[in-house]
Length: 149
Image 1 (cartoon, rainbow, N blue to C red):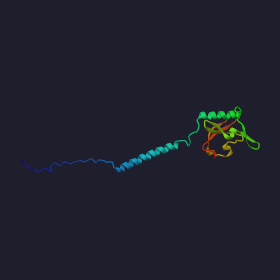
Image 2 (tube, one colour):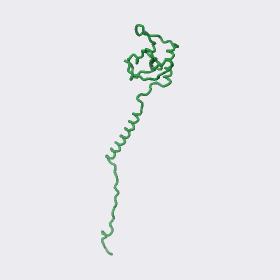
Image 3 (spheres, rainbow, N blue to C red):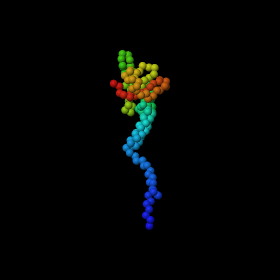
């Protein structure tokens, strides 16, 4: 039996594959990317939303339109209110119409009006115009976004 050292003849080369081990740095990079993506999507959604959601549905507006027309035609008794010496107006033009728990105001085109917007009690930015009726007697129906002081 021969006893020969075989060190130089066959050497095994162990090939090691580098293994990526996620650490805290990778976690924070991914978390930041996800947060930026979510915030970007939310910003796009928020900017595409309308400034205000409409207060009343179209059925409510049509009911108010009919109520205003009935008062303007004289079908419904709408007493006159004296506002000053020789100045009278319909009570509904001064105080508005209450339907369904909301108060609606109207302004008649081409006539003196005494609704809050015409009197200057509220600013145009404080009202939401619901309907502009261009019939024989044109008028605008609106609601207040904030209560008048």
